[in-house]
Image (cartoon, rainbow, N blue to C red):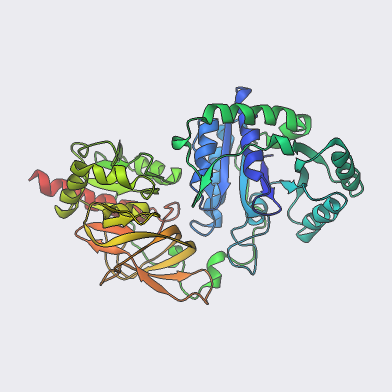
Length: 476
């Protein structure tokens, strides 16, 4: 069957519920495949740390409705159990008009029931009105039951049960206020798993919470994965990209490049400063025959040997700016490689690392690689949202004139904008004022935009073709 874990709002406790279920199942020696709705990077890290399997993002804007179904039915049947963690409130989507890209959209698309997490801390009989409203608001979204979070006392629970029994709403879990497990967070969400020393004890507590807080007799059949693929549900009558006057990536004519040399080695920045990567992107590179060679811009003094390209994902370079700056040999090696024409792809945090300097939240300026003539400055304003990007220039990833969907999520800005920007960005709403951003220097593609390559396989293929040509050129 497989359940979607949704909240009535952000902060209701769906991540705690999801991790508790995953931890309890994993402690039973069960194989569990998890999914996350939306463009999140950090929650999937916790999923993977619990289950030992990469979490898969389900995002109909960055990819497509068809790809969401393909991804889900490719991975879910490989495990005994599966679940999907939602995003924000159940019906909160990207457009504000329909619930496009919301948890409800994905649940309906995959024809999966929803386990609704409700924060009961300031409620008694009103809990029934909330649950009834969520169940009746969109009848095509099937509510299998609720989890009551932050229940205060036995008497409080009794009142909640009486209210929900009156509308015949199943209660599949009860978490007490004292059960709250706090995972530290900061400016972009939870602190990633690699930075938490007490993670095993947190998972122990989550497993105990999962074992004691849920009605497993009812839940287990709902989490059991079906065998074989099945057709998609009704979905929406309108696709996300219909809200924009410009074309979707699938409507943009892009010739399919030939598969490049399968023996290429690409250095990928993987440490506490750079950890934002979609599992599907890494899988795709490996399916194309690439050997991904992890290295640390914080700890390694040199780049890996015999590489033909560089890949910098997002992350938290601002948190580790002192360590990154102190590793002068690594900074010099990266700059020399980019200046030599080595194809380089950098997203968000990677862009910041390649700048001249990074000014952190305390106003301290730290020297970075210096290939980009600008400085990244941390600030309080969060830039967040889906963007459709029109490529204004050729780059190792995109030919000029092509379009692609991406996502921005950062609290920094650049002091100097590129004189010849790589992209013109459009927001999800037509009211969004287009902006220009992104850098193309040498064979470097650097942008704040995070990209998922699920429906744009030609992007990594094009990048690898540039890497292949570079490899041939330096070997001659």
